[in-house]
Length: 305
Image (cartoon, rainbow, N blue to C red; front, side, top):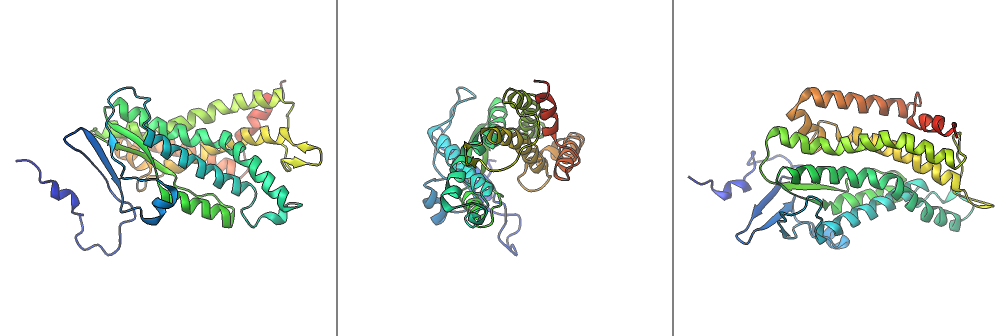
């Protein structure tokens, strides 16, 4: 007997005490082959504010793994833009960080410079993480496309604007299809593994970049000086944030809670999850406490030039 589709609308608890914090992702395929994906409840005014419809019907593409639909491209651009703006605001201390600058124009110019710097340094950590999920999911025959979270983007930009702090859930790759627990674990671990690869590659490549630029020690200061743009600081920050962003993003996603990658990886294989979680957590702890930082390896490589 076929399963009654109405059963999908029932929650486990018919009388929940509070609204669920994490909504299920429902996907169904209509007779014309179109896959429809709905995330959470209605997007309300926030969805209209960003001009994104998370319930947009998506055509199911069976072609190349690297295919990105126009709707997915819009979501990726939106999430990347909001993420870049939030990181730029963090770099200048938010809207109320003008006291740390000689003038409002200096604050604005630093913001404009910080945004492309952060896009180059942190953008790949976010984008390639999500693409890693997408590629592996499509390899296993699933429909997989990135969808931005308008509420998460708006909250993240507002937090950066008012407090100068970045904490954002830009969105996630939506997956529809039948997979085994092992395959689901492979899809989940793809993102953190991409970040691990970027972290490892960033150390020698960053060292070469710093060495060719004549940077052999840690530098600080402002992007704008009396003599113009401090290009050496820009390059140093790109290497520093590249290394740090990939490590922090991988560590955060390995937490075994809610919709994070760690929960799916642990469900597949606790040993693999624990090993990578301890690795990422240990490196992050050493970096945050200042006991060791991977940028020191890059600077050591730069010193050879």
